Image (cartoon, rainbow over all chains, first blue to last red; front, side):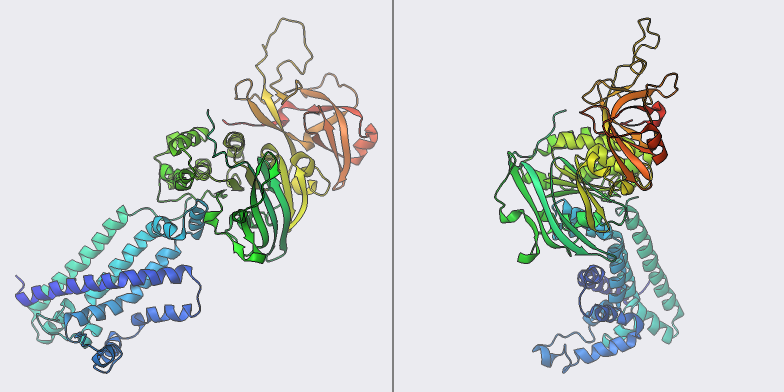
Length: 227
Length: 400
């Protein structure tokens, strides 16, 4: 049986990953739609910025967040006028996971929108549908599979997040210790049985996520162009 | 079948187009007015036909000029309210597609792949119901007209090409459009299927009472469906007017006869004649002929029609396969020897295009001859001739 701190780490990991994914999905999907369909100045730059966390070391992202959240940072107490009380709490783990999940969510969702034939949207408009109705009844359902994949990728990325999380949330057992940081601590102290238990849990979450996504994709509406 | 009518406030709309639109290789420039139940937009591939249709639909928003749809009552153009302007660049008006009240059928149907046939058909029905159309009634009429009933539960991606185009047409009709825009709706189908779906389009034209614009590079389809035609080539209007007249104009005919030109005429199916009649021999062309030209009693031998006697369908008579004779020929295997009068003779592409009338009610039949043949027969407009046509050279367009 895993001990209490392991259970805590598991529950915290799931909670952090779920909240982080939830936070990213709506704005991430909106941004992805804009990148897929709209032309605007600075589009390439916006796209690059959204992809940045994927290509810089997570600890660097963590450090930038740390600077931002410091008392005199752009998200710090002096600027906001109140203490957001994020650093070294589970909320910091959520923030770190969310930022790290953005590139995967935006990229996957953008591909999902780009794979919807824009002529289908034009067709819907000839039938008298307003652009918002077209988006909700045509674009969104046809992109649903890809958006689901985006959410699952974002979630699994958040589950595995370590570098940025440990930098701003720390690695406090029972408070901010996730599965990833717990494995690191157990391995540092040479507690191989603990490492093994944590590994089994991590593999279980990963396997479940993959199977769940496969099952959801099977049931999602068929996508693609008509013959 | 009772044809559903759109609300009576809609008379026959008149579409006025006066636009310029820069394209890669030329500028599309059209100044034109379409009125009537069916108007063709004909021209070779890349002539700008689809761009014109997309500008009318509001899908192409870079056209400059004026596009307006006016309702007419008893033939008079009603004072145009501003809502009739779909495009008026000078005033900065460009009505969004969804406010133009059009029905659009593209080449590939563009059915919504996540809907079954039924939901596809109903996708635009809200607009029709907002106009006071009884949707259940319209749905029944459209599914009967286009024979969609067996397909209703099928997912859109499972349909064959012909089924898909029928559903696309039904979906457009179900949205209560004021005008139907058909962009080569048959072009993605093979020849046999095209011949069978074409009569459905004619049925739509005759029973739904919605004016239609029909883009096509197939002169056969344009002749069967359209009373009038606009001919485009490299973005310019080459000719416009009644279909049979326009397509055989010397400046248009080379475009229309890029492959093989056939004159398409409406015919009525005859009751099959008794094979071994013991009665006195009637004129041989009457005996066993399968159809008569619509509105006449001039009989024509064709391959046996499937349709019941009295049905109207279309026959295609290839201009290359008609022989002209001065004297009534005897002992000839060709079944059709129809008296006709030479209507016009024009030089086209090194050959001669003869148009011969079999009756005042039938559009002239096009015949291609060499200059030498014409000289030997000393043909002049007004001369009496016989049209010799093999029964098997005639193509029938009917639903299977």
